[in-house]
Amino acid sequence: MNHKHTQHLFRPGGPGFTIRPALLLISLIVGAALTGCDKDGPAPAAATPPPPPTVEVTEVKQQDVPIHQEWVGSLDGMVNAQILAQVTGYLVKQNYQEGQPVKKGQLLYEIDPRTFQSNLDQARANLVRQEALLKTARLDMDRVERLLPQNAVSVRDRDNAVGKEASYEAEVLAAKAAVESSQLSLGFTRITSPIDGIAGLSQAQLGNLVGPGSANAVLTTVSQVDPIKAYIPLSEQQYLKFERQRPNDSEAPPPVPLELTLADGSVYPHPGKLYFADRQVDIKTGTIKVATLFPNPRNLLRPGQYAKIRAVVQTKPNALLVPQRAVADLQGKSMVAVVNPDNTVAIRMVKPGETIGTEWVIDEGLKPGDKVIVEGIQKVKNGIKVDPKPWKETATTAQAER
Image (cartoon, rainbow, N blue to C red):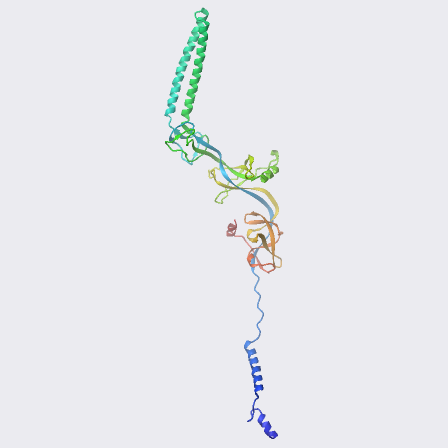
């Protein structure tokens, strides 16, 4: 094969042009790589970070805070008078309406008076008879005194007359006492109230046999409820603390007003005051019973009612306060989320003290001027950046925290 013929065979496009298999495989691999690069396109750009979470914050308040102490007690009448049947007889009339106010001396019950009236009549008749006998004895004595100087009667007759007169005088006194006793018994058939107050349910019904020793000895109870007493238990420690802090009478400050909360959660509008402490400490409970007094002009309060009483026992100066919603519980420990000046979050463990309304006194862990998260604390963690917004307490929020 000459040189010309060789160039003709391997010239591309010529009649004898042929591509070797190895060269074809390399071409296909390179083409596929180039095709793949074109299909995927350029590498994606980096993702945009999410904005910081929005939270509501408030500044820690510092102020003097009154510290309250609460006790649970019960109400009782200022005076509770048990109305008893003092004579035995059948109950014939009830003259009061149960549960209504009664006045001192108002007629409450009547017992059948006929037997007692009969006894009084007999006692009076006996008194008249004894008075007649005494009058006769005195006339005899006068006659003996006139005749004795004339020796018409003996000294013995005079002595008998003196003794007879004295005996009849004693009988008259006994008869008068019997009349008075019968009058008292007859008076006891009309049972009246010894005090002003509220009359309770009747324990006896008309027609019942009532009287001392019977099952119906107590007919009802009348309680004086204005003012009304409330009994509360004080521990020995509280009692000793109050007594040691109390100054002399000459230097005593005005009494601390007491606040009464009723069973429905409402606060009684009239403040109360301390009345007296019991003479001894209950050895079973270690408490001493203290009586307080509350005005009760509308008779709203009744004996036996539940009473929650509280009073200001001290004032904590420069106390730090945060909303209760800002304090979270973590396995028995209290914590708050504080927003730093650079809007980063710092989780702090705190020591809460007393609750004042919807706020919590923080004894340790915060300082004045700190900003704590109130809403959105569940969205944050230590070191995260946040977008703080001012928090405002609403009526619904305050009610939910009470």
